[in-house]
Length: 304
Image 1 (cartoon, rainbow, N blue to C red):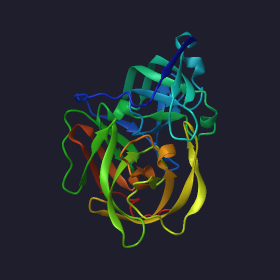
Image 2 (image 1 turned 45 degrees about the horizontal axis):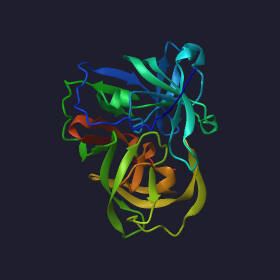
Image 3 (image 1 turned 60 degrees about the vertical axis):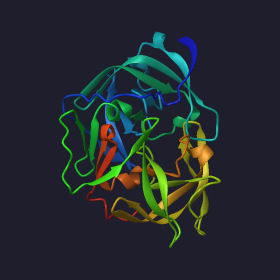
Image 4 (image 1 turned 180 degrees about the vertical axis):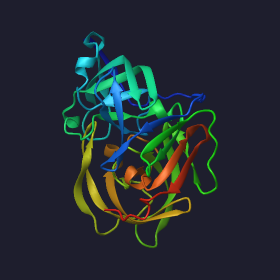
């Protein structure tokens, strides 16, 4: 193993011009604990359960375990540090830069494969995350009714007027949007959120000195989860309403987390997770800065 220490920030970001792939492709998935799981093979491995993650902002995959150790050339491993959500220092990982991925109809060569050696990821229920390989090269439709991802190329045609268009802005390759939130009854405010498909929660609001909302009275102290850099503690409560365009979601279970621990994204008031997004069929159209939403069969299902 090469003893080279590199910092991987998950923001291999730069100003880019979109050049969409030409073909339309399909990737089946299944839902597990409210997140999209994409079966993926790496260097011919057995299928791994990877979470589709809008926060994975560079080509490659991040693995929570070493299941593929027998399928990689260990002489090419380099040691890296990976910051992430949590209260501890960046975690340690190993990386190769020539992984071959097979995802549904898609085959991608020369990909970074980062393998966590952190104690914090050992108990995670999936094998890792994947994101920019899809979001960065295609317009991505996610049909939660049929459990199918459609990767549109340069032949993409905007859907009919039955879809709601939400403007988005990419910041460090992560989709941000504006939405109206009513945490406490009678107090509505416009706030800035980013979409985190790897979050199994409906809504997370960030605690910070300039927060735009009033905290509800009925909060309970709680462990909120574990990120790449350790545990996250905060509060659980409920928000009355969230408006995404003309859609209104009611009685959303909400995690309230310290911004400096939960999120590395500047300017965000909160995070919209997949327990919210999965209630729609969606199209992430990064080249045109649009998110298309259409209520699906889960829309009227009460939050748990």
